[in-house]
Image (cartoon, rainbow, N blue to C red; front, side, top):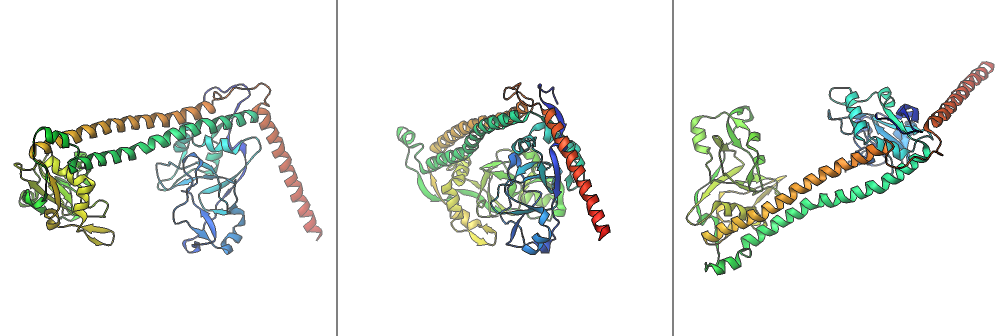
Length: 465
């Protein structure tokens, strides 16, 4: 830690905690669909948020009564010292329980009884600082479920400010971080707006509205409503099925997770499999091929892409169909944009066969898909305009991503300033933090002495009895 201001003192979290109570260890059969809410180690998220699973676990009254010391009420300070992931993104996070009803903490979660020298809100904020997160990840132990030992947690360094300054820091952080959250919320909403923008561009493009004026000035005929089968010159053809044991090395294979929004994903992520030459030549892809997902959950069914390049020999899997269109009447780039539009997807899915968790279309469904086909020159102009608008949206999206990264760094910068004593001014009249530590040490010593005296008194009473 950097040098602290006058009146501050570097201590440990253990000096701020009077005691900590670990959670209960219910078995699977103990859980119920009603009763007292069970808080699990994965429920504490960033920024002090407790996010319980949609189908939360509950514990019956009998179990809760046996583990009454593990019950927490609104305002309790909680920490998770176990994490299911090696990344340890939630390990050590501290939160305030704000539920209306009582809850029971379970294994991996601890309730902290904090002393009067620390504001709980400040402790929660500190657990989200870059320093704290880095320190926790360096200290974590375990192979699968990583954890912090109690003593490791209690020994985490903490820069303690005077109590009055803590109040000023929390008040300032509440104001500043609320403004940051507002900015983040606005930025997070922009990708949804851009998605709607792209769909509106496609809708205007495939309905003929986008190029209506251009068509008239070039004296081109009105688009025609035709069936896709009328312009298909090869296919549709279903892809290749091979067992998982064939995957690993060999020829690239496009699978249903290999393309989205009309584009094939990064080729380096495309899997490989071993094939006979005859299999390759039967299911090989060529530039200009159009791919359609024929089996998937309904929200992904019918997604399409065009093969613009082939860095190396590639085939396609059985849940995909491929076809080519006649280049004399149809531009494959236009056809893919039509199929990616809400109109195109609706057409492809109109005769989908629905089953449990998945849907499917067949080759005839592809051929029967109604399509709005302008003259070839207009198709080319539509593709140019759509690409132009999409490039504009892509530029905005890239700027948003950079802005989001800056905002994320801004949050950490603000927290770092707060815990270096640079967010609010110091007041020489504040009681120094080392005096707070002395006071709490004295109180602890008195409490321990009273506990020992009470223990002795209990022994003497029992002997007389």
